[in-house]
Image 1 (cartoon, rainbow, N blue to C red):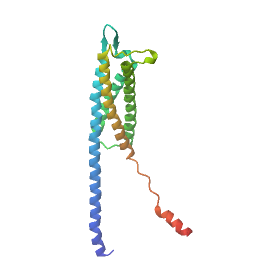
Image 2 (image 1 turned 90 degrees about the vertical axis):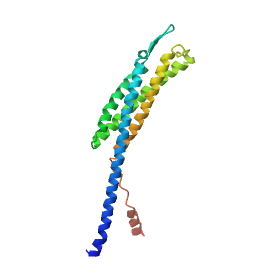
Image 3 (image 1 turned 120 degrees about the horizontal axis):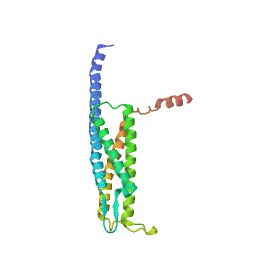
Length: 207
């Protein structure tokens, strides 16, 4: 190899190393920011779910017209259980994510599956509570079911507050599902592109 050629190649190689090093630093910085955001989104549902759970646990009313408690309706009992499960999972997962450990494929798959399951669990609980609350507010004239919230206003207000807080937690879990999906599928290599020269060579041979 000629001396002049070697002199010209040295700066080019150093530049390529600097570009690669800068790219790695940028990727590492993005991963750090993503981990911070993910940790926050896992910590936030703890307070939300516990608050919604406590409001519903203390929700009961008794007056001259009726006596009711959240335990009388399966949808509200399910909401309490779902919020309790999600609060516990959020705390456990936030501790694991906050630890500076490399993300392995089994860990990525575990978070992906659990985030999906917990999202559907709390979403189903919120949807069931909304349906029961709507019937309590509006009634159902088709089956002569009158509105109950007229005489049980405080009970319905607490149900509304607990359900609304639960839906804020649902938004957090939806975002967590997207993040865990991103963390998982970015570990897989993109499919190799087809060689564009192959078709050109075949066409040239036929020509």
